[in-house]
Image 1: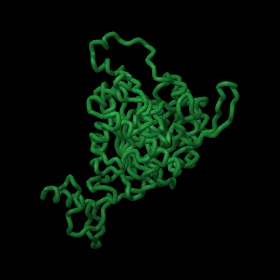
Image 2: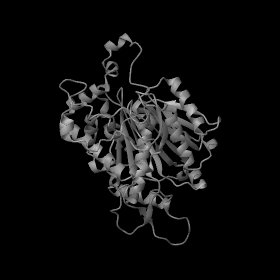
Image 3: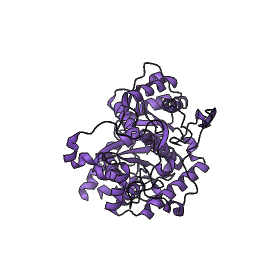
Image 4: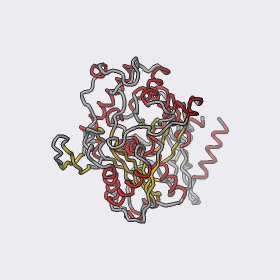
Length: 460
């Protein structure tokens, strides 16, 4: 205890003003949202990577929703244009655009994304690439941009995500290497995602009722958020068309609302659904994420550049972690990735005020929430993928938009947030974000008296 106190005093001496005038000593303060006194701001405050804009399209049911006749590149172009128009950033200043995307053939989708950048008004000088870490691709794109800015490759970048599950379905068209027969974990990489959901439910005792209840809550919260207008802050409406399948007639429409939410979902209704992947299983169409079309985009800058341009800071990118887990129970990924990312940020789980955990399947979502002993009132407060949908490559960018806009609404009661998802073939990813106006150059210090109870948990 004595060593910890002395360490704290030494750290605080470095924060004391260099002026010779007598002033009160400084000590770490207790954050209004959680005990994060251990979280140290360093001298590179101006080099923080910040987010000034995070938007998404509405999310629509694949093959029968609002985007069934919308080309994927039009979805991406809409959000790319939106982040530029809403910040007045000169598109020529963007150092790179990185797009997370999963299902389409790599070279084809990379070409479509480059075309989308031109549709959105970016000049030929702005490069673009795609990234595929399956369900975490959108978050990976944001993390890649943040890393590039932190490394000094450029000062402004866009991390985006795109998926049209209407156009591109989950399939394995090529032959499989015969040696997979003698490598169990390699073989498990080929398991249908629904079977991995059943594995999680069976191995960790997640009941059908728990799964159905989680789905009902997801729809209820998403419906409430829609009615209250919460999603309007993060959604860019998409002007597109709907084609009548019988007559071929095209009708111009503007899609501005998620169309997969079922406000009247009930336990009784979900209980009637049969298991999809296993005869005696518990995973149904009602307690799984929806196949979905959508896109999202996040504009990141070095803090000093954002301040120079007078841009309001929506959030601060803190840390990112990707981890590997057993492919047969890939859904447990967030339970491993979240602690890794939180620890890398110098925080504890209790310091996190909001979580956006992708609901790929209710089984894995319920397991991860229980395993980490998370307060349900902090998790997916506006619903999740079981209600909104899971456009694979776009999900990470969607989650960033949803999280940061909710943190902004909550203000000083919400400082740190986490995004996480499981990843097919056995991985998990997570990112830690800080509310945009929750940081300051003085390491959140304040004048202190003799009370040493302000020391953070890890120093006691």
